[in-house]
Image 1 (cartoon, rainbow, N blue to C red):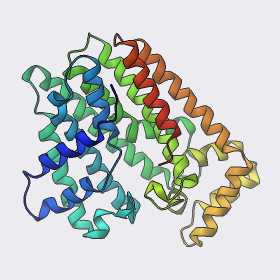
Image 2 (cartoon, rainbow, N blue to C red):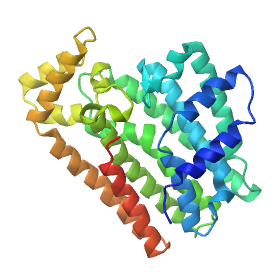
Image 3 (cartoon, rainbow, N blue to C red):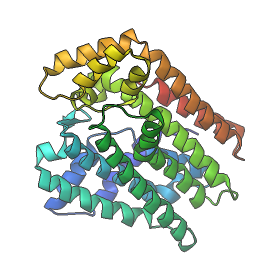
Image 4 (cartoon, rainbow, N blue to C red):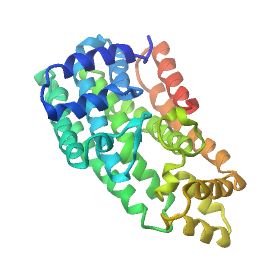
Length: 320
């Protein structure tokens, strides 16, 4: 068994979206059609399968999770004033901000509709985890915005922010898969731990690729630096830097009028000098190990455990 359900998910997304007609849904169909790794629905399907449930039986809530994820991206791109998403125009750029907000809102409703299309015995658990995750994602986004105005961001607070903004949704997917498959009591929490820790390692890699990735990632290289986002690279560098270098970093991350290319290169030079790459690898390994520890405690088969471990490792090595 593989977690790579991308083709199956794509086919079902298009089938599901065909039921929605009207101008408000055009941006929805657009953002859902321009790609994406489909990690979240894939993990939900794989978790259910590992506990003995055919993936087609949980496809609709899996699609709901992906719709919710893309809803968050539409609004995130507005807040970041991002021009590109997956190498294509962002929704607010292709249409306008008002249309993007409205289409994002309707996506939330669509996501809720899909996620709650489950058997009655699973409905309360699904609603509870979805509502909890929705709130946490919004709190994480607010923290991300708050950090832009701070010269110093505490390491633990940053980890909490990316956990809320990114990791809890990945954890919710593995949790939902276990719930829908009637996994043994307590194992939904182990699968959640796996997803959250894998998500932390995933986001750290995202922070790395924003600066050190290639155009294949589909976003502006160095966009976090341009937008003064204090990602894990900045925080690790700030911890290691001398007082003089800290002042330089603070200067670059408090202005927006500097030549973007020059700003990116100067900051990158500081990161390279401080060997931030090595620190990030160690941090990723920490969360990878925690994900592995959680998956080993479950009752799924050895081959399925290996599959989830291999998948987590693959996310650490991805280049986009």
